[in-house]
Length: 284
Ligand SMILES: [Zn+2]
Ligand SMILES: [Zn+2]
Image 1: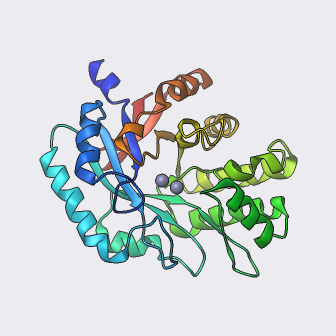
Image 2: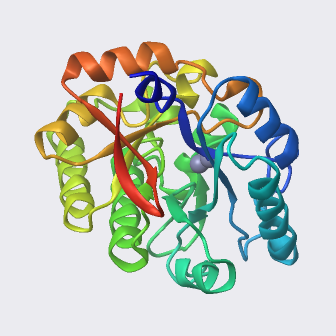
């Protein structure tokens, strides 16, 4: 039983100073070991062709892989470490997931949408960052049409799943974080977008992460995706994992106890983690 308990502490989605994280990979892992974490995925924001302040530089890819490989050796038997990336997808504007898979021998990929492309103007709306800026930009780019902006976010998510086949879908409904006050998440059109997206997730055997970052940063009152959507995952037998999307080791396990308890009460029994280079089930 002791092993089962220890295995609960996994986090497959973390950031470090190769992107917008606050700590180098070695300190992040060293501090993860002290917190009793057993599996950690290093998943910097993959390089983008578009200028931004949060993703890794393309020239850094080799150093990134080397640092993780060195950590795998150094912390052997103390913690399992995985080479991963959180990769954005914008049709015709981003490197393909295979581009990174071929260059880096990744253990897995997390597919996340942070920039929503307007289908005609091709302008990009950044869903994250400062709330007022994000709302202003959404209104400007999508002509005050919240529903249209959200529909495009989910259409882009589905296209990413179909064309790039990520292992994990990152913070699936994070689009709600900055503009959740502008629409009703119970409306039929929104629930329809969620269902269509979950069907695509199910079809392509993607794992949904229950991401706690909005909760512990005080930016949203639920996990990404919401408990409502996670319940739908359970009914559809879509596997989940739990992650904090930590940008510092002090965030690695934040909101874990609360969310783990809620997942158990919902009826989830397992979280996906890695066993012998494959996905396996770990008791929650
Ligand atoms: Zn993200
Ligand atoms: Zn992230």
